[in-house]
Each structure stands twice: as structure tokens, then as C-alpha cells.
Length: 465
Image 1 (cartoon, rainbow, N blue to C red):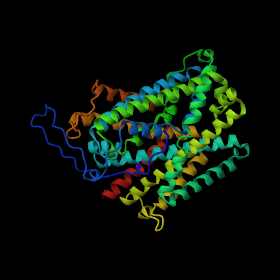
Image 2: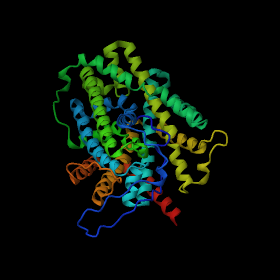
Image 3: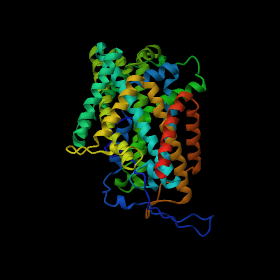
Image 4: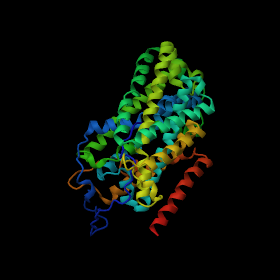
């Protein structure tokens, strides 16, 4: 995951309403199509086309994680590392199919919130919002930890624990200050760094393609299935982001056609880019050297190819990319806390708007402090797994919701929805693959996410009471 979401990306809409179900006189017959528009979406302009939505999905998916993950994947999988990208591509491909079908049927703003709440009710919709907030929070902390690692590699004196903590605290304080002063300042900062993440990767692939050694892809043994599952769960972090890009569905032109096509274009492009980066990195450095350079693997590849200037280019690019991701998430994530407080799930002061800058300043400060603390106390991989667990749970719920939307015949009035050619088989396969990946999650990781969900459940029912 890991581009730069818009300010509205993580604002939960907890009450969707407006869905009218006309019961079919014959339960064996398909129910008539349902209108899935909302009064709240009528004022929105449907201006996002296929290429615009595909670019948004690509932007929210490609981020700082790919600068760090090739080393971690190679350390676990050895020469078989490229196959894990194929596994993740298949997994995210199944998820994408479910999102494409659901997104072509429910075209209102809210994305996963809308799919889940429409099918399973307000509690499930709220929990989907909590999962998305938890996903974004742990993902931001994870990428922030990687950012501190890149800075420490650039300037070794800043790599020790105390200077590393000060770098993170200073960066979050700066970003919080920028975003408290206004959403426009935060958006401009995101725009300034949005291209920086792609340029170093494209240069690396172009230069390194001619220096790849086939001998570095010969595997002496096949890793165990459990190793595959754990590695895929870690790498899945780099493929997440589609759930964020689909939130503004109320502003997509002809969503029944646009959403499936945009998703296909974006995710094919992401998979090709990621696999190319892994093949070049492994083919140039070899398994042992790439695994040993886990903190900044692509910088080590660039140094082998282009010397010290290449290493400096990749490190600066990685630092800018991760900083850009931090900028986008610092703009977006506090709006979720603001919405939860506005709707009574958190203390009302959290919904306080700054009198001069008109921003949710308390939510911004709290969100930044939480993410900073997580990044200071944890490494990239540990936080990435927590983000992935939240995402996998959310994706599984959305896969079931997509199947239920199809079963009920819910669709946008006057439009033909995208129907998966294999029917429920794709939904079932999605849940099976997610279940397989979840087998690699440790008890401590389940406990951390479970504690958040238990607290969220208590808040929901306390508010209802």
C-alpha cells in the first residue's frame, strides 16, 4: 500500500441508508435491481474516468514498502523469492475481482464501508471502518520506521536508537504542523513528492536489466509451505491500497465499467513493476548479498550498478517516497478519528476544529503521536504484518459482501454490473487464499488486532445503548 490518499480517503461514513429492497414474489427468482445511489452523493460530480481511477489506485499502492521488502523476502525465501510475488499477485487479483464486482454494484462514496454496511448492517460497517483505520495506522507507522532506516543509512549518526527516535519525532511534528495549518498545505506537500517514488525504481530496472545473472535464480531447495505463507503475508503489504482508492466511488463516471477496467490496468502495472524490481535486485546482487542488505536493499543494488551516486539516488528516492507516504497518511488518517468522535465513538473534543485553520487539529496531533510511538518502538516488518492482518480481515469481509450483493441482485439502477465469470468460485477462492495467509499470523499479532476490535465493539454498543 502505499501511496498518497486524498483527504477524504479515511473518513468513515457510518450510516449509509437509502437502500430499498423490493422483495421478489418468488424466492427462487432473481430480485429486481436495486438503486444504490444516496441523497448524499447526488451533489458529487462524476468526473473520474478509467485512467484517472487507475492512476489513483496505482498511486495508493506503490509506495515506500517496495524499497525495503525485496531484502526481507529474499532473506526468508532465498532464490525462490520471485514466486512469492506471483502468489501475492494471485491473492490480490482475487481480491481485486471481488472489489471490481462490488464497486460496479455499489457506486456511492465509502468504498468498503458501503459494501459491508449495506450487506451486514451498521455494526459490520463500523468494524470495517475500524479495520481500515487500524490498517492505515500500522501501515503509516511501518513505513515511518523504514523512513527512519533510510535516513540512518544516509547519515549513519542518525541510525542509533535515540537519534532515530528524534528523527521520527521531528518528522511527525513537522507533518502535523503542516496539516494543522490547513488541508491545502498538506495536499501541496503530497504533490511535490508524488513522482519521486517512481523515478528511482524505473531507473534501477532500466539500468539493471542488462546486468542480471540467471544463476542467482537457481533454488537448491523449495521452502516449506509455512514459509511461503509468512513471506506472502509480509510482502502483501506492498500490494495493498485498492481499498483506499475506491472510497470516492460517488465521483466515478460510469462506475459499472470504469471500476473493473481501472482496477485491472492498475494492478497489472503494479505487479509488473514489483516483479521487475525483485528480479533486477536478486539478479544483480545475488541471494546472500540482497538478504544482507535488508535495511536498504535497492540502494545496495544501485551501488553495484552505478557506484556511490546510484546508491545516493536510491536512498534519497526511498527517503522521499516514504516521507511522501507519511505526508499523505498524516493528511488522511486523522479524519477517521475526527469522524469517530463526531459520531460519538470517541470523546467529543477529538472532533474539535481549529478556529483559525479549520482543521481537526486534536485528531491530527493524537494520530501523529500514536504513529510516532509505534514507529519508534517497532521495526518495519512487525508493523507491516499487523497492517496486513487488518487488511486481510477487511478483504475477506468485502469478498463475502461482494458475493451477497450479487446474490441479492443489488446494482446501480440503469447500469449493467460487472459479474465474475466464475460466479461464487472467485469469492470462495479469495476467502481460501486469505485463510491460508492468515495461518502464518502469530498469537501476539492476533492479540494486538483483536484487542482493538474488542474495544471498538464496546464503543459501538455503548453508543447504541
